[in-house]
Length: 54
Image (cartoon, rainbow, N blue to C red; front, side, top):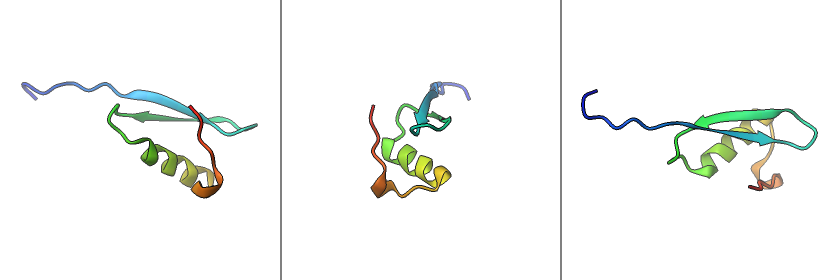
C-alpha cells in the first residue's frame, strides 16, 4: 500500500530444558504474554508451572 510503513518481524527462539527450540516470528509490538501463552499451548504446558527468562 502506498504510504504504508513496513514493519519487520523479529524471530524469538524459546527453549525448554533438554528439548528442541520453538521459534516464533512476531512483530516488535507483540506482547510477551501472547508469545508465552502460545508456547505453553504448543508444548502442552501450564503457564503457571513455567518460568520464562530472557
